[in-house]
Length: 411
Image (cartoon, helix red, strand yellow):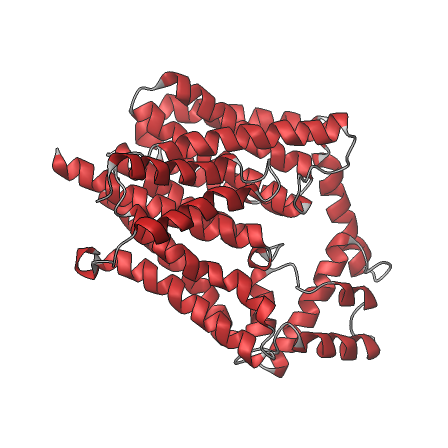
């Protein structure tokens, strides 16, 4: 176990990952880089016998995914720049080992998520109302900004369960504010894909917290949520109604063939192209660089719109994986979603009433759940922030669960 100062630094940098994630240019890299450096400086030779079977499952799940993606880069012509994003699944592993040796400050993760969500909203409102931007985006693509803001907001709501269970009412109020701010940041980014996560994961959070909240409070939250959503949709300044109507219009234009180059229409065209790639090479796909020739041929045959050539991925994580890496790559993609999700859900079942542990497990489960939703309309792993805000939060919350367990056992 590391000394108190070193452990505090480790968890501070972990919290910093959330706090600065989308409000500072490349803010998600600051905390993660510092904690990675610490993992190289302080981490001695890992004692594998101290790791539980579950720790090793997460460790090797990430490692094998990275190796598989390296293999696909090799098959696609070995463009080494494409090694960067999957390498994060390897670079996070010493951080996991370091966190499992760093005790005492896992609750700081909650402070980071709440502050990060509030900061995201502050930046979003500044960009929309002061700078006059049509979509809030910080230094990221608006979709990535909005999805990350939604993730921070939902994690803030999970932190509220921890603060409620521990009767820390000031932070409970801030956590609720943080939850609303994260969702509002997503709304101000006008990124529709992330909005699908809200009712689904919101229901999951309420259902899993129903015994902590009590029946009256659950119903109060449901009614307040419906009223807030209704007000947000009705409020012209939010842009929600316009974006929904725009999506419906895009589908109608695509269906009748009048316009296939709208936002939604182009997605359909990209999906069509990826499915054609999957048909050509169902086992290992055609590769990102190999896909260019396939798309050019489809355009020449008038099978898809020429505008598809401007996009390197298909704006759907699942279809994109099938087209570029085939069924093998798709299986590895699902594994990095389902292995952590299964581990965290197991911990939630194991500790139904212990919110000092359960809250971290719920937050950890939330990350792959959100990404599985975000992946319906965006290829999150094609962006640095998408990879970083997946692998590091999962590792953070898994280590937090393990330390919370140790503290409960010590009692």
